[in-house]
Length: 219
Image 1 (spheres, rainbow, N blue to C red):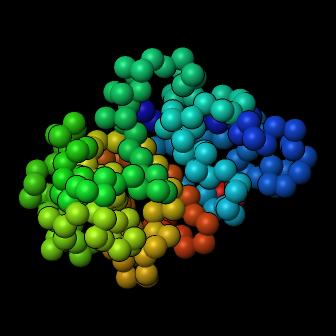
Image 2 (cartoon, rainbow, N blue to C red; image 1 turned 90 degrees about the vertical axis):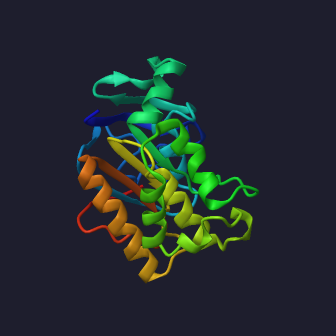
Image 3 (cartoon, rainbow, N blue to C red; image 1 turned 45 degrees about the vertical axis):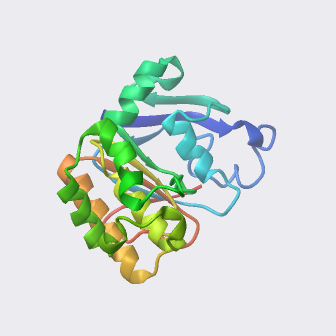
């Protein structure tokens, strides 16, 4: 997949407020046509409550409560079957949701293996190497519930990278990270996106991920 296009997309909750902020000032909602191209990088900056997490959920197919159309390489995603979505989420779309969705009773490695067992994309050594780069190797056998929020966020990032992808959606990926860990996460993501010639779409409320080159859009 090379393109994701939004055509006059608007969350249903904003219906009737088209002439008011945040819709009226958005560079995304109700645009006639806005296309994200592979392998470019985009940061979507937004205030809370303007729909950044909704946008990621719409693109990922997890929610359909929006007006307009979202097209993958020209095909409306509303036409996709469940099987098609399963294939896309295993081979084309990677997603890190804001709430991370780790299983608290499972260890860091077990959480990651839940996904990697489906994709068979990484070896254990590769996973440990990524955890090491994010200073989490010593926590591989620690239950997720015992990690700090920042550690959980880094573990979820490694899990998100355990698959092939054309587009990586990351919703506030560094909201709980300091500058040093932000830089480490950004470097890892940028390297993996470059290796796969993939696009990155990242959302941010305040703490932007330190990606080297990107297009900035305001939601």
